[in-house]
Length: 68
Image 1 (cartoon, rainbow, N blue to C red):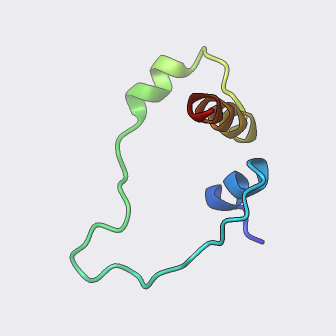
Image 2 (image 1 turned 45 degrees about the vertical axis):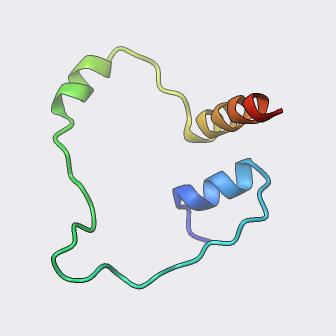
């Protein structure tokens, strides 16, 4: 199993969702953005980062609490 964000989300949330892969975008569609993150890096350099799995778990818990 590849370590992609979708697989991490499924694992952390104990989801039974299935990944469905679709054909690539047609020519001319923007397949991926590449924003300049220089300012973000300089602003966040002193801040602690939350590990991705912890962040996904916290986010999922928050949304579960909102719909219960």
